[in-house]
Length: 121
Image 1 (cartoon, helix red, strand yellow):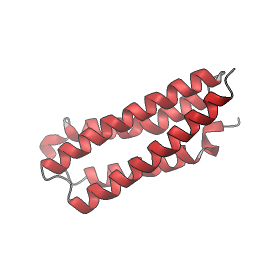
Image 2 (cartoon, helix red, strand yellow):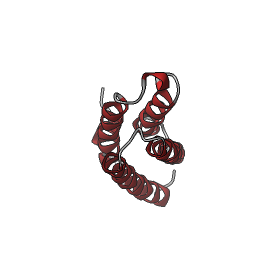
Image 3 (spheres, helix red, strand yellow):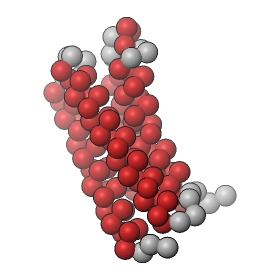
């Protein structure tokens, strides 16, 4: 079975972001395992998951909708990483790395949205 999402650079970079988020959240306090750690991981996972689901849809309009949902998950992740930084769970260097990855993915998603919107069904 051909997997169209695996051809998308935005999906690949989002997978890398998930790996980074899991790596850094391993050091969060144990008391956060069901709180911020869980939330931040779910938001990160949502980004490539929605890209994949959208790419598997039958219309470009549906694909664009899922790309917007992926962007919303990035906004959620941005907020949660900011909270983690404020609480001292993420140092400035780690936060900057995650922030740069999120910015890159957001730009890629915006480009995909523009491209798909030009060629609507």
